[in-house]
Length: 130
Image (tube, rainbow, N blue to C red; front, side, top):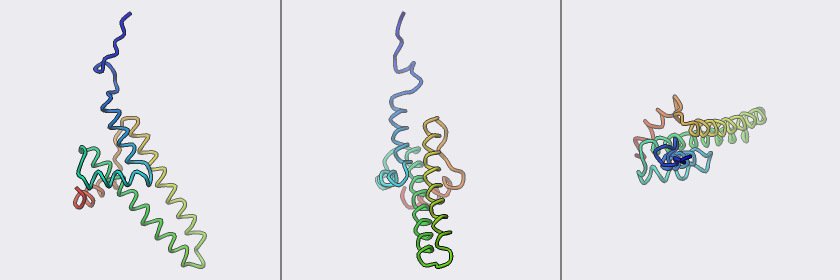
């Protein structure tokens, strides 16, 4: 019985695995922001890497802006403090869940695009960082 274990026969190529792991690293919440920013700053990587980097940075910046605004509102409000803190925790949980969902989609080989955010990231960050 022959063992056919050549690269052409395997459904997962080593380059594809390395590329997928790199893209997954970009999508890790908060931590993935820094390699994504570095990739866009240096303009290195392929089209998919740049697109994933833009999406990661957009999600992180929107989360950070929302987090800071809700925390500031909770700090300065006497009446809605608890409500704003709860909303802040939902907002943060949503960011982490969206990032985890994108990682799972990436592992399954599906697209890592989000309908509104990906086009926004391409328009805004594509203009300034690529």
